[in-house]
Length: 49
Image 1 (spheres, rainbow, N blue to C red):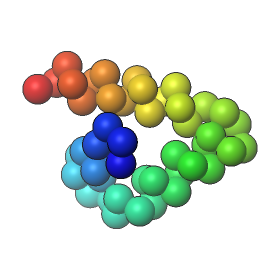
Image 2 (cartoon, helix red, strand yellow):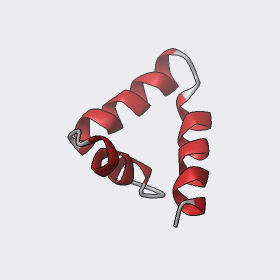
Image 3 (cartoon, rainbow, N blue to C red):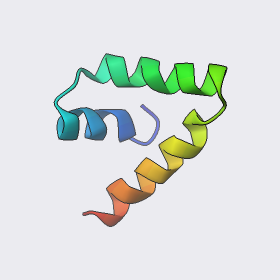
Image 4 (tube, one colour):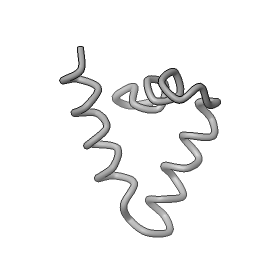
């Protein structure tokens, strides 16, 4: 939503964007790893253009 990672990842994996967004939120709330993973995926997205 903020950087477009969920939509980009859903296109790559063929998953529903809502599932990916919920997964990121759960990772943040349960393990605290969602933010770091989100930023890493954003870098991959930006560098793969």
